[in-house]
Length: 284
Image (cartoon, rainbow, N blue to C red; front, side):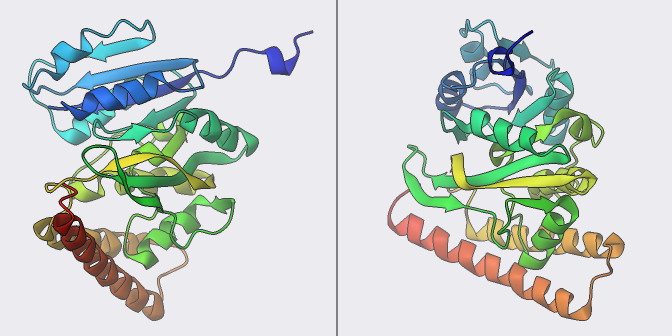
């Protein structure tokens, strides 16, 4: 009889949509290859860029790596979907090309996800880092989420009420493959809500397990944090909130609508303030 502790660790797919990802793609790749959980399927999906990312990927020799290419440029949502659908493991983590993982990110979130049979997602905090990987703001995310396990529908409702994606970028999420693939495709009709649009489909299918600890770094830049983008974020969040309110169960109350409005505008103010501080510090 096989001792469970000696059984082969679960296979986890890490999928990376790539489009003109240099130079940060190198650091991300190194952080993936440094994972303490080694039973990985690593899929890079190159989306038609022209900066040499594919040349770099072709230098990688780790046998766990698969590289998908496309003859023509595809949208971010199409590339995220292509990468996700290519995964064959029971667990999937999608991570963007600029970001980073801590060495034990996959191992810890796999424990989180497997300890709760009804869980469809494991989510965690992440650090906000600058272009050099220096931590600017540690342990960001999960605002308003205090329990270790929550109904997924309540997690999405909290996003609505807080006026922001409190789950964070995909680097902070490990999915069970079946509910994620059943929720494909990723959609970018409001591009800044690309990740939240899919979280909204997956999370209500079961439980969400939370870890109030950073599992990686979300990299910011002038292009990703700007006053122009803050305005766009406000508008696209407003559109997402309106769409969510149409189908939310239980129905959104007047008090909740007011709270959601105030939350969204607070997030815009915080984003603008953070941008100003980081610009003064020359952190970009």
